[in-house]
Length: 218
Image (cartoon, rainbow, N blue to C red):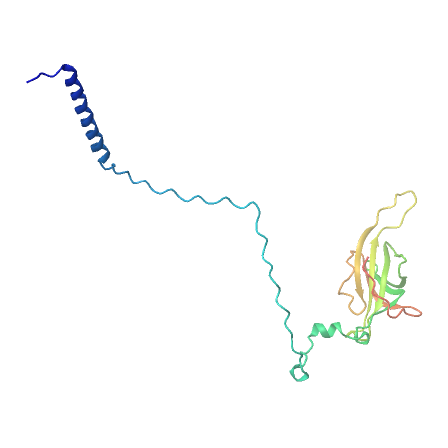
């Protein structure tokens, strides 16, 4: 039997190694792939917003309703007037009458120390002195015919000021009374003074100014 050379043995051994390597590669490729870990699916990406808004939809207004006419039978009677409405629609003849005004007031004064009384006249707007008192009548009226009580009323201002004496300074005046005096009720709003008392007697004039507006208190 012939002996093989070392070179031939080497070639044969290399061929066997190549075959074994091919078989090993086939076995590795045939193995199943390892299981992958559970990975949650990624959320869907929202599309970018539009750069411009869509125009609003046009809404048509509904047509107006047609109201049927009302017949005379369907119209009820008017409600009665309230007192406030009746007063607003009062005729000028139904308005209360104004007081008649006069330009002279008749006053009477009393000196409590000497018991002396004096009746005098005071024209409206002109100061009148009685001893140390100065009377100024601002208004003098008589009640209107539609008032329940007939009376004379005067708005009077009374100042207390002694007469000026030669060589002595004039003392300042002090207010002693300011308000309405009533001829029928002298004690209703009297002059409060330690020495004197005064009250209204009446109002008179040659011809009263009828229908003049009442005087405001000064």
